[in-house]
Every structure is written in C-alpha cells, then in structure tokens.
Length: 364
Image (cartoon, rainbow, N blue to C red; front, side, top):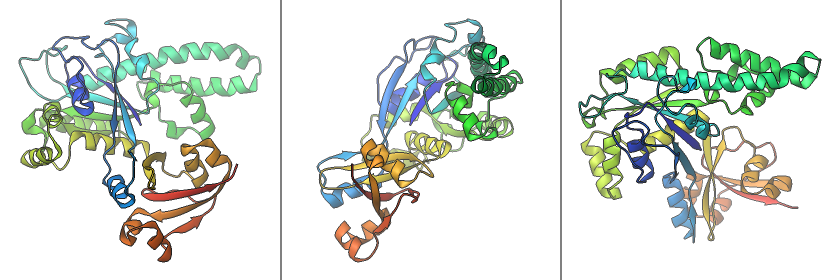
C-alpha cells in the first residue's frame, strides 16, 4: 500500500509524516518547506504474524508495509502555475490512496495561508487543484487519441470516449467515480494515473485535547465529506500526539494512549483506513525459515495470491493447503492442525480470506 500525503502548507503534513514514519524531515512554519518528496516505509503491525513467528520459532519475520510519500504543501491556483505549480503532484500519481491532512486546530503561532482556519474551504482548495491537474493531463491525452478516434480506429475511439466522459466529470467539479465504469473502462482510467480516481482519506489534524472526541471543525468537516465525498473516510488525528508516541517504547505508548482516551495510535488507524478504502486483506506463509504477511485485494483467488510470492507459483499452481489463523493457533502447530482436519486442500477457484495461512504446491 502506497499513500500520498497532501494538504495546504502549515497544516501539520510533515509533522504527521515524521511521526508515522519516525523520520526526521523538516517541519517548519513557512510554505514550501518540503520541496522534494519525502518517502517513508512503515511495517504494518500485526499480532497474528508475531504469534505465528513464535509458534514456528521462525528465523525471520516479514510484515507487510505501507509507503508514505509526503509532498510540498499545495497552494490555491497551483494548477495554474502559482507556488511551484503541479510539480509536486507528479510525485504521487502512482500511489494507491491519498491522505489529505486538514487543519482542524487553532494556534496563533502557526500561520494559515488563507488567514483563518476553515477545513471545508481547505478541502475544496486542495480538491480543485487535484481536479485542475487531472484536467490538464486528460486534455493532452485526449489530443493524442482524438485524430485516430475520428478516423475510425476502434481502440482509440474506446479510449477517447472514456477520457471525454472523465473530462466532463472533472469539469463539473467532481472526482471521477471508477465504479461508474466497466472493468475494461476502469483499466483505461487506471493507466492515466489520475489523482481524482484514487481513494481518499481525510486526516483531521486536531490539538491534543481534541484527539479523542474531535471538535467543531471536525464535525463540520465530517458533515461536508458525508454529503460531497461519501466514499471517502475521515479520521481524527493529532500530529502532536503522534510525534510524542513515536518517541516511546511499546509499554509507555499504550499507557499514553489510555491516558489520552485513545484505543490505538494514529498509524494503526491510518493503516486500517487504507486497508478498508482499498479493500485489502492479508494472508500468511509460515515456517521455520520465514513467516511472512502478504497484502492482496479482497476477492483474489489462490493462484493469483501465489503469484504475489513468485510468478512461478502462479504458473505452476497445483493446490493450496489452507488453515485459518484461529484454527492453527487452536491446534498449536501445523501437524496437529492437519490431524484435526483444520487444514483444507483448495484448488484454483478458492478465494483467499483474511488471515489464511497457506502452503502452496506448485510445479514448473
């Protein structure tokens, strides 16, 4: 999972990035502090993987990861060349999801580029810049296929019609909803690397005292998103708290979360939100040599899941020996799981489920 972080200057983007990735990029009180994109790869915490590693006394534990890409703050009219223009947005065109950090706190010491705190206005500013940026790309792509489409080239005509439909959506001020397109049409759109086709989560950055319950700003933002971007997700998060958590060990971190009235860290909530938005699940491979977690899209069949490990596994797929995580833990080991008939042999049509522990048989 790869997440691009966007937002206006001085909303806490880089501070949150530092905390989530435990990195140390600049986070200063002036626009364009972040020029080149900052990239941080974070291991996804999963107690199930830890349990499997202990069960197999494994030599190596490999979690799934999330890659965060933090770009410079976007200012109004960036799409028209103001600030540093669209240069920054090109850095996140290949991400899976976008996280918009929205300022939902008051602080007279931190200037706001528009002079006041208004999360709805800020979201509209950023989203219009994403739309303008995509329109510029679509117009170029449309010109590239228009001539052949007009002369009867079937493939170019198909692409042309899809791009024109997407362009009309953007011109109306809306993001592109890929669910309104057929699978073949969606594939064309995915090849364009458009920002407005990506899943979006909104991180409402609040002061420490509002982390557990939110505030008037987050309430206003939530209502706006529900009406205008119903397929997006919003999480309330305090970059300041996350910065403090990043410096603590596990025990102190848990105590601090409880004191703040929080069930889990912002990183955990961001990851869960990303998994939900992208409809991702995790399966495991386990053994003495290595225990590893694998991200796949929900609905993936066994051969394609095997292909995540190695293309030869998919090409030469024979069968999958599948044990549910809970059943494996109940049995205590894989030998006992087979004796109890907890391990099932599945074929090419088996749809992998979250938490499956799988041993693939293949032949090439």
